[in-house]
Length: 441
Image (spheres, rainbow, N blue to C red):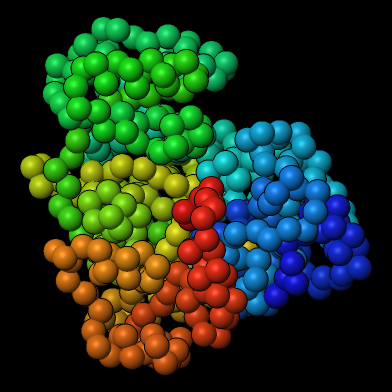
């Protein structure tokens, strides 16, 4: 367990006195997803250095709200320059950390900005277990993703591109920072209201608006949101609001090696419960047998030439009676522990691909699904939504309270694990304190 979350200089000093028998993993950010990745790697003896944006002013080792640093799976934890604020500073910090460790390291970016930063900054001494920046951008950019879906015949929500981006590459005619008024009119006429406004690139939209999607109720609100996005240089699209079947969201959790999708390690997960119920984040996910989901997701990844960990998200459209591809995340995500529990340790497979480590998956055939629950959100839903009925059994709750779920049964958790209690204790400490942590994942 990391004894503290250190400043950048403090982390460099601590690593100078450490020794590693294999390349450590650099896991960023250091919250719920990072905790899942760290535990997956630690199960195979991989040392983990958790990196995140600074707490306080970044100069002193102050309390950090991320849940990964206190875990027994994390060996060291500390601050680096936040890449969205200073990519060069991020590169310099990471290179200094790797140099202090005395060995190369393997990067795991657990949010879009971190995965992109490791690829774009390309720090010396860092091995990437996933594709380079150009390939990642092709997959993450929804405008390009939906164009791929069109070519491959993969259903996706009705979408109208509006322009407004200003990435400076000159590759896209609409990426000029100007709104296409004709496209705005066409979208409003075709989709009606309410409709959804989504960015081509999620994270820059989140930085500007505090969310990655906005629902607008009328033409005036539509024009205001699109104009605001254009002012931020963010390319946006208008999308039909899908009549989503609650509890039928599915994702392909996969690791595609450099050899291609024929050798992919993949598990389909059904986000059976979200918090809030309709459009929240996953809080109860279970494995599912949906070959169509796997086939479509791998076709998109194959077309892009992407290798690495990814999550391809689908929703079920009641009106069209089919699954629609919404998004592909080229990184680990909140319920990354589910495929690990099902025998497909995606982080370890990725780590082994760029090191001398060996990993063989142990995906067992079972008539019962493997399930993952994030108790913080699940309990909030039980306490606050009278329409929601508990989907865990009495035996499930007894195993959770006793801690025996870690040794038996088909249930795993996002944070709470009695064998590694510090992250859950940290969550209790921060949950009831009036301060805001910047990331839910």
